[in-house]
Image (cartoon, rainbow, N blue to C red):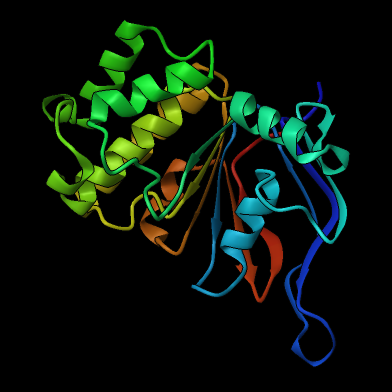
Length: 229
């Protein structure tokens, strides 16, 4: 079985000479189908860089990123964006919602660019489990921060990706709602055999995951694993 996501000897450097910063130090990382992984670290530790390199939004300075057996590092941007569209769902901190579209229209927009999204009843289930079915005709500006976050999660999951990458998905949620969101991510990961990677500084979330990595100054290390080999 090939891993869903593999990073081999990957690093990311910004700037050069005196201004050079190694935002992500040389990293080997593997994520399998059915795994929910949390990468925890303070702000400025390299979490977001790790996530954007893992998801093909940025190319690494060195090393290779492979998604479901596809080495995306060598692909041209057009092909890489296709892999992203078909394989990866992003839940980013700056919720990636289009301001002039209602919640329902955000999903319909995905239907225009990608086949094989969730069926109608799957979307209905998603709305219900995230508690946003009553928001379907609202615009992002009419939603609270927590509601926007949950819509962004729905959008990330609606495309039925094999890998979900979430950047601080519980940042604007109270504890109860944060746990609900993690439970949804956990259920989805297990029932649909997805791979979910959450980067966060929120230690409340650790009980829900299979593996915990710590990232400090761009260096990522496995802290604990509940996965029995």
